Image (cartoon, rainbow over all chains, first blue to last red; front, side):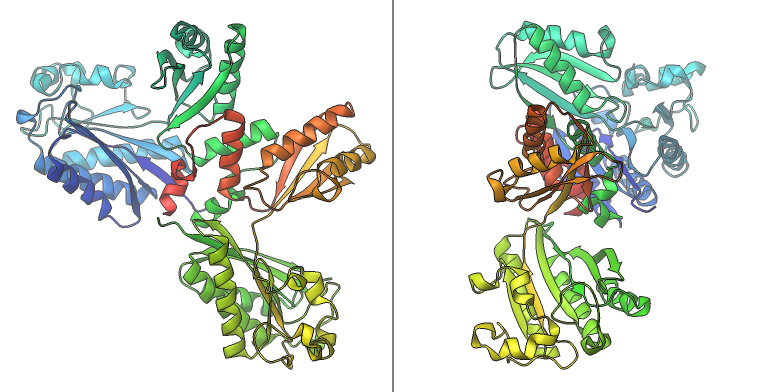
Length: 298
Length: 298
């Protein structure tokens, strides 16, 4: 088959010191067969998000190299920031992109978790699809108490780490590792400035209030002053972009409002675009293997 | 910028002897930084189409290696086949795919043409976007008289080759080299078996009878028995798939017929899919750089 592709998006607890961020990113860049795609730092959160991708074996190497570098350079005892966090490497999600199953991504998370404990002596929790129990699926639950509360949290047998002894690393705390589906951040701007209309549409289309599964949505004002339905599509393979667009369009029409435009924020997997073409062009027997650039990647 | 990508689709005059076809394809496969994408042979045409792609410098190397191998192995004096042809390497088009201008593709054609004459002593005609005169734009005009008529054709000063002396190579004839836009072979099946409806729609949407520019179309019966509008989209960047689909849908509606499904035959460039998403989702500020897989190729 060929063309296996997995994405990894570690969040590290450093968003201010450029030399540290560069050094951590460099650990990824120096790993063979892996492409560093993006580094986004937030000074007020004092946190950076590193995005890279490649074949599974190479991505594991890069992820571990990044963890080792971050544990080496970041002292959580000196860390202050607006975003909740447990450790120097706060969270490492693996995201299957192409020809990789969720089970394989979970296995990658487990392999990395074991290695982080064995070689770095940082205890590990598994979350999302890699979670060992329902209580550990959601990141906010695992992060509760944060780095400063780790000693107390780990003293509770219910919060013993999934890998390693229940002892917070003296400078790096603990790390959360897991696997999740890729998500698409997708916003639709309306031909109205009435944010209340966007809020009503958001309520109608999102999972939490009876709409489409795997869709999170809220109504906000866009930078341009238009009302915006701002969404996360958590499973674009089962609830594709086109279905969400059509649902928002239908709800907007009930309010007598049209869609002005839409935006995808960040990277979009090719399969999501293939789905859009399949939907609107009623394309038969078409898949990513027919996209010239995808063939080149195999 | 990075990510330069050009496709090359040589047609060679051998579609029967598997060892010769494999050897010619192998000349491409052995070239660094080039991906062999497809080899299609037609025994009755006695002709093979080789498709490969990569960065411009590597594609030139692969194209020349293929030409040298084909000139070495194919004797046109023994060649019989249903498809018109001028030489062992009949035609070599360069197709700009990403971050490559048509001017650059034309320059590649000129470079290859010079090298074919200098090293292989095969005279070269330039066609399509690389044509030196309007009389040499279309392949059928250049091919008229075929291999067997080359001596007579070249004796006419109007048909002197663009590169080299007006003497047909004793076993390899002449070669046509050029540059063209990528084309998309795209068929739309209708919810009717009435081929006459497909013919009327084809006439309404194609350039030659007053429809959309850069669209060739005909009405045929599909394998499944549905009437089909079978098309070549010659410039999907200016006349995108979505516009063609919408035009066919509107024409079909005039006949009270709906679209059943559509099919893309062969490889589709990523930019064509990006256009589809832009069109139907009204996507703003979205380009190929936001597709995860395209970023990986840079």
